[in-house]
Every structure is written in C-alpha cells, then in structure tokens.
Length: 376
Image (cartoon, rainbow, N blue to C red; front, side, top):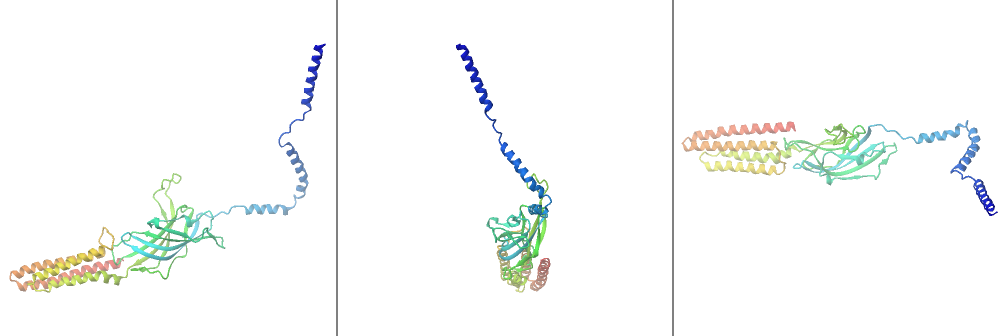
C-alpha cells in the first residue's frame, strides 16, 4: 500500500510539472509586436498613398529639396583675381640687397574651400621672421556677386640681387613675389585685377626716381618634388610678381661722385705746368692727388657691397690712377733731363705729355660713362 501511494504521488508531480510548462505562453521575439503594428500602419496608410499617386503637387517639393542639396561644382583651376597697392618703400640696403615694403594685396575668388589669402607664400623674403601680415576680415567677405574677398596688409623686407655694374647710373627693379603654398597651377592660377598695381601718390623713395610698376603673372616649375612620393613630378605653381623700376637721378649723382674725381685730376695736372726745376713741388702734387683718389674710393666702397666685378665708379677711379701715375713718370723723366741741362726739352716734354695724357684720360672716362648710361 505504501509503495502504491508513493507511485501515485510521483505521477501527480510529473503531470503537474507538464501542465505548468505547457500552460506558460512562449516569450515574444523582440520587435514582434512592432512589426505587427508597422504592418497595420502600412495597411492603413496604403489607401492614402494610392489616393495621392496622381497628385504631382505633393512630389514636387521633394524634387526641389534634392536639387537644393546638390554641391556646386567649381571649375579647375580656380582663377583668383589679385591686386596690389604699394603704400611705401622705406629703405633700400645695397649691402644686403634688400628693401623694406609696406603694401596691401587683395584676392577675389569663388570656391569657398580655398583661401588664397592665408595660403599666400612670399618667394623672395628677407628676414622672414620680421614679416607682419594683417587680414582686414577675420573671415573672407562674401560679395553680392557671390565671390569671396579678402585684403591683407603686409610689411617686411624683401630681397633681390641688385646688379651694380653701372653704379651710379644703374637701373634697378624691386620685386615682390608670392605663390600659393597649397594649390599648384592645376588647382589655382592668379589673374591681374584691373591694372594690377596702384602706387600711393604720396610715396617718395629718397635718392631714386620711381617708374611705373606692373603686375606680372607667370608659372614657376621647380626642379624637385620636395620629397613628396605622391607627386613624382616637379610641381608647377602660379606666381604673381610686382615689378617696380627705379633709377638714380643722373645729374645729382654725377655731381656727388664724379665731380670730386674731376677736381683731383685737374689739380694733378698742375704738375705739368710747373717748371722742371721745381721737382719737389711737382712730386708733392702728384702724390697728394694719388692719396686723395685712394681716400675717395675707400669712402665710396663703404656705401656699396663687396662684388666680384668692376663697377662704373671703380673704372673712373682706375682712369684717375692711370692719369696721376703717368704724370709722375713724366715728372721723373723731365727731372733727369733738367739735371742734364736739357731745360728746353724738359719743358717741351711737359707740354706734350700733358696734352696726350689728359686726352687719353678724357676719352677713356667718357667712353666708360657713356656706355654705362646707355646700358642703364
């Protein structure tokens, strides 16, 4: 009896457990209800969609929004209009071949992804650490025609080798050049804005006459890719250059530099006019003239750089040296003739030597000066 009761209890427990598991509802899968609700919402909205299939007015705004969202395509290379205003040129240092500039440069362009004002890089700076660039606007200004506009004022020193072969009658050109440091010529090119360069009417450059400036646009190809493995070929960049021609007033500089040499030569010629008997006086005149020319040349060299060629003034001094030394040679010769009792021959030598030496000096100096002024 006990055993049968135990068996019945076990059967009841098993039946109860089976009924419990069968009666619990299955767990819903995530999103199952949402899917059903979505299906019902779709079915509910279907008639409305079917009713609006023929309504073209409802679809039109969507098309307009798509058109408005399209990105504007800009042509390449981007053409950037460039203009300059030369406010002042403070100094020109011949020894360092540099000059200080105060100027404005402006840019106009269309592509908002570019900023040529901040990407501007000067190609001939001197003491680049001292350059100051100040943009007029924090962000490029949007003009009514859709272009972007920015003005940058810059001050600093620039460098260009100044040839002095014909100094002081040389003609020089001051250059201010820059390129875009980001885009090469395939992505950006400069174009002159109007006349390109305007000069401050009140600008004065002491010691020089200023010519008409011009803006030159060119391309510069570098003989290297600067180690950029993604650009195996040398890069070509658009370059803008302001060219300002200058020259010294010829009459003023001829008076300042040539007149002292002429005075020394005229004084040295007095040794031909003195009697052969005054040996000491003639020699003193020649030696004094020679030392004076040396002093003048040393003073002149303080204002010009050391160069490996003869400048015009060096040639003028060289002609003066030849004049004085030739005169001293004649003095020595005439002194010996005087000591030998040939007084008349000594005086005749003086006269002939004076005519020949002065003529040779005048011809050589004149040819040198004329050649320099023609070459500029």
